[in-house]
Image (cartoon, rainbow, N blue to C red):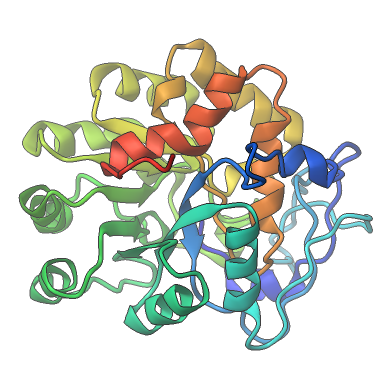
Length: 335
């Protein structure tokens, strides 16, 4: 999820009635040796918050309308006070606090950023970083040779986040084909932003954003042309349930992640969407993602949403939090 800077600066506490953080014991269940079961978060942003970022509460209860006569706030969630807000990181503390949560919760993360970001996170959380780099967002399409070098020689393991939806570009646009071809050639998994975005005000804070460019079925042409491509749809293609299910049903290499959706939309809606994917038979294709950005408590809160979901069995929770990502990224499982 792309968090517009103006949105972040003006994002005050947003509250739904039932979003209090579960007790630490619920989040921090441990094995017999006292170590929490491993978690893989496939969607962590490495960038520190810009100056002026305000607090944010999870799961807004409502997206407010606006009047084009203005002024229109860039953030569309209903704003109020709450007791469990996410505090933004202090200057210079973002990576330190996120890394501390990763170690405390036994999380390995797909961290999105540049080489300096990766070095910083790896120093703070050794052995817990899967480096990722992407394209898109503001028309930034990196040269193909540069990306090839990142994956072939510089240790990057994931192509993502591909954020071209914010530029109004469809994933099946011919200009993107060379990037998917490179990922298929090098056997690099791809994470692409689809579905939700714009915090209820994309027309205000991201006017090039197009909801139609996030239709999961727009990936069908890409997958037909690149049949070996491993791709995960970020934000689970929300709210396009039927098309997301159709794509999953037709393409066994496609997974989804829970990122952003899990803490930004009304909590009952989050659970309805995820439960639909599970009840349709795709619990082994759901990856846990927090969309950790700016506010370090997004990560533990997002874990708690999965851990406390009553419609998930213990096995399904472990699959979503860990096992599915091990399979998708071809990792060696922790004991």
